[in-house]
Image (cartoon, rainbow, N blue to C red; front, top):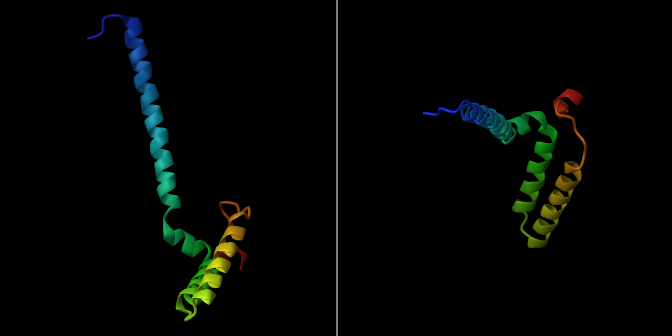
Length: 97
């Protein structure tokens, strides 16, 4: 197929680089999919999950739209403030209790 050894070496190097890039991309995709699993978040942060569920139930179950708006606003503010906390990958609420 290819008679020139230099071209053959370049093709082999390109194939190896492509395999390495594909392997790295597969690893990233697997990590992203693992991070998106909702059951992990529920198990690692049960207190926050219960608070969010309670606030959401309060906001959506209220008869007044103003109270629902305030409840959702407070929920959003809490979620934003909690999102800026630096938490290590191995820390969770169960381990702190």
